[in-house]
Length: 590
Image 1 (cartoon, rainbow, N blue to C red):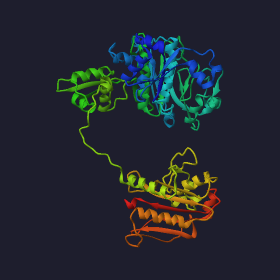
Image 2: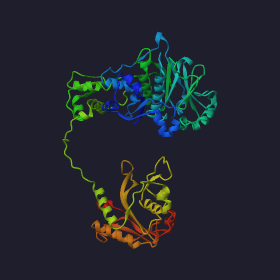
Image 3: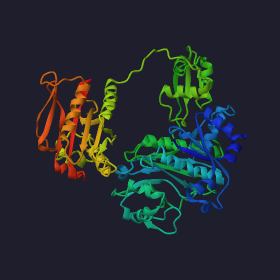
């Protein structure tokens, strides 16, 4: 969940009321939020960097509030205050409007060229006209952009936001893509010009911007936005130009969002303009801008689209577990910034979804808001009408019973990783990775986790290797799932519950592992025999020593192997003593 830090005094001033910490915590809970921490800038620095670094830092009390990840409208002080005020019925939810330029002027225009198609093909734009910034508003404006970048914009991979002082630039603007060597401008807060290549090198050590360089650094063309005079506005998604940076004196803000996902770009633009249009000369109005696509299409943004959904009061009552009239439910939804009214047809409720509520996709989202407004603590506890009895899965029950008896037989249970390296299940066991039905991870973070395990044996041998200094013998077992490719399954793979045990000592101890097999079969009530019982027969397997391996059959079907491990396998796992092992499938015994 994103955490929003707001100054307590500033928050109370905006709410027009002061609260004790306990009262505000309760208000947050009622609204579906959580007051995570009460701290200050000085406390944070002291905790992270020590008391010396904290000297001179602000003592202003900060509230850190956990916000649901889908509520982009609560990521700044303005949206938070607006939501709480509407919830407390101190104000009505504002109506956002998109207006044309004053005095019949031409809208600002952003022209997209076809070169952008390979890097970031989409862009949207808008203008906040006659806005008034204070230091607090300016800080909140910048912080909201950063929160959106980390949240809906997925660290700028989907959307990158650029905000510019419109009075320092002139449209129409051109969004294009050029070779890095052909781009040259003065980046934000820098004193001289750099080429795009030099900018990428400059920010490789920057603690903030270096995390975004990978998005375009390997592209042949970099996206770039110019004004009509050739002044660079920004090189998304990395950095804005210094020429058009906004300040406390900025009165007109041009906002552009470049994107790989147009829907996310529209949501991001709507969030920024709805949150800060309240500081415009005409509150909650946004000046439209035109975007021209390479194919000649002309789109006007922001959309600020309102839509209406219909649901019944009975649906809400049944899902939430309450008994309220349609009028009461409509009032609850209105408190959540969803203007609602009862239609003339039965208990149907017409719910208006504003542009700030992109999280409302389905009737269930509306029902959830009704539950929050009603108060989770006010919902009466009741016994579910459906009578069900929980039961343990048979496979898990069998697993638990076997675990107990294997431990009683003197073996110690291990729990190993479900992911391992290709080498663990192939080379180290003397097998070819191409012949193994392994599920591969498409983008493994480390060489240790490249595939899902197809055998429990490598994990146990690595556990033995990590405990070589323990007194001998080492007797370990594990009963867990392996993952095997299976084209008959809808996901292309299936889990398979297996039992594996190893015996590591100065002598191989084949008789110990064979005795364990007999004990397991005794517990499973499977008698020795070729047809309806179990038996072993000599087999060859590259993992085991030649002539010291047997295949295990139960009721005529092969279920696994047991034997003495090959010396090469033992040495590949950095072991020095003989080792015997058993690996069987326990699912046929259900």
